[in-house]
Image (cartoon, rainbow, N blue to C red; front, side, top):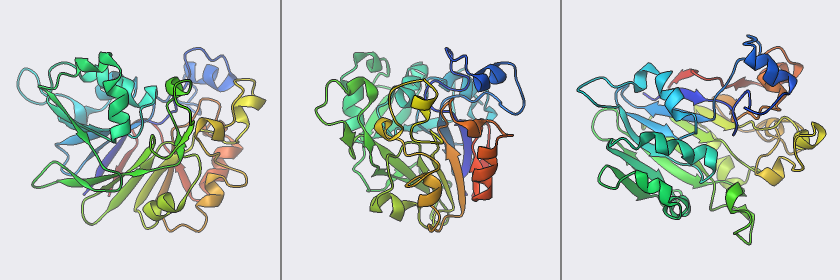
Length: 302
C-alpha cells in the first residue's frame, strides 16, 4: 500500500501569493470556496501509515505539518513520524522548508549530487546537523530504499528536462538542464506513483516513467505558455521557467493523450493559473480530459 497526502498544491509563492492583488488571489483571501488557498507544492508518502517521507520541503512546511495529523508527534517528549525527505530540485520552493526540520530530529535526506551541492554551497543548511540528518546522493534512475521491513518503499529519482534554480541563473553558463531537475517514482512492489512538479517538456525518459503508473502528479504550473506575460506579471514564458503549459500544442493535455496512466493529477499550480478556480471553464476542460486538480490535504491510497 502507498498512502499519499498532498501537503501543498500551489507553485512557488503559494495561492494567494503574498504580494498579488489579482482577482483570484483576492478571492482566495476572502475564502471564496471556489478559490480555496493552497500552500506550496509538496507531498508526504508512506507504506505503512506510520513512517512518512516528504517529497520536497516547501517554505510552508511547518504549516503543512500542523495541518496533517499523520505527521504530528505521537510519542515521548519529542518525536516525528517523518523519516526522510526527497528533493526534486534545488529551487527555493523545494528546499527552504528543510530549515523547519532543524530541531535535532533524525531523518535522511535524499537528492541528486547536483542538488546536494546546492545545499552544501549555502551554509545556512548546515543548521541540519549531520549528527541528526544524513545526506544521501542518489544516482539518477537507480532505486533506493525508503525504510525497511513491513511498509518499506522503493524510490527512484530520474532526470527531467528543466532548468537550473532561479538564484543560480547568473552563475551557471547553461540555463537548461536535465541534471538539476528530477522526478520521483515510488513503488511498494505492486503499485507505482510518479511525482513531477516541474517539467519543461516530455522526453523519452519521462514518457517511460509515467507510462503504466497508477497515479501521476504532474507539473500544472501554467495554463498557457505566455500566461505570465499576458497577465502583466513577468517577462518569461512558462517554458523559459522550466514548465510546459497545460493546454496548447506540446502542452500537458496533448502529451498525455496516448500515455497509459491510471490517474492523472495536476499539481504545482501558479497563482495565475485559472484552473485554481473550481468554477472555471479551464478546470472543467482538464477534468473533461481525464485529469484531477490537486488541493491541500488531498489523500490518495494505492
